[in-house]
Length: 85
Image 1 (cartoon, helix red, strand yellow):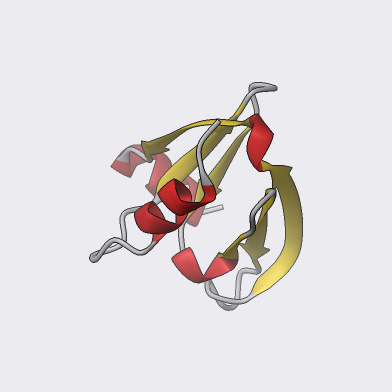
Image 2 (cartoon, rainbow, N blue to C red; image 1 turned 90 degrees about the vertical axis):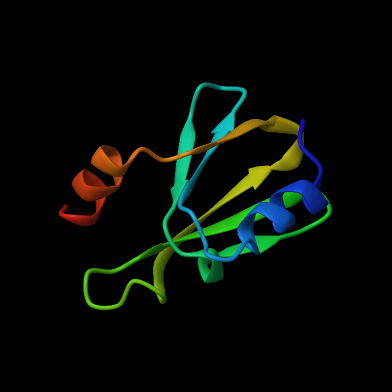
């Protein structure tokens, strides 16, 4: 389990590097814009943007911090595929 402070520190890095949050269930959540993640003491609220504005969310998902097992950089090839969909 990662601490809220660890995730927040990674999201605040300058320049921001897109990151993948990996959960214990095998699910992963790609973070392409740091403003779309709300870090809480017990969970993360992750917003997914609409096609018209990458910094305003259309949908959200909540992930318990107890289930977050890793963070990794998103490879450039995966970012391009995600951004083009």
